[in-house]
Each structure stands twice: as C-alpha cells, then as structure tokens.
Image 1: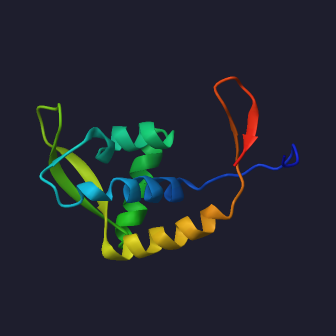
Image 2 (image 1 turned 90 degrees about the vertical axis):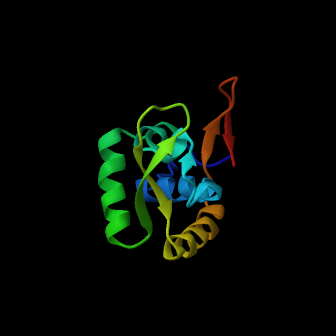
Length: 116
C-alpha cells in the first residue's frame, strides 16, 4: 500500500483526453451519446462545467480536439460535442503510457482503500 501522504492528481486535460479516447468510436458520427457533450464529459470526468469549457478551449487551440455540433441520443436539439484530432489521438496514446505507470488509490464499494 502507498504511503498515506501520497496523492495522485490526474490533470483535467488528461481526464478529458482519456475520456475522449474511450469515446473515439463515435468520432465523425452524426448521432452521438450524451458522453460527448459538455455535461456528459463533466459527469464522467467528475468535473465542474466551467472547467470542462476552459479545458476544451485550450485543447481546441492546441489542435488536440475538434469541436462539432451534433444530434445527441435522447435530446431534441443538437449540441456542441468534441472529438480527438489525429494529433490528439497520438498525444492520448502517449499520456496513456505515462499514466499506466502511476499508482492511484481508490475505494471499493465497502470503503476499503485499494492501490491500483
């Protein structure tokens, strides 16, 4: 088990990049799931909506993510969505390799601390 003072903080941009990597099968689709929208990304990545917006602007500016307006399953109106660019996919693979080497602490359903 890791020392009690060891804390791992996964950067907001890394959380979002990993999430978009997991959703990459929806890239360039006309109809996408809620997970590709700002509220969906915020929910999955445990972030506040303004943090998602701020980080998305940075990722778009850096050419790692592209912004689209798409139909979302279960919604009446089209919404802003994001997907990785080719450069974003390369960067995601690099970040995944680095994050795989990082040990993190989580709690299981019973509250027991686990290191993974």
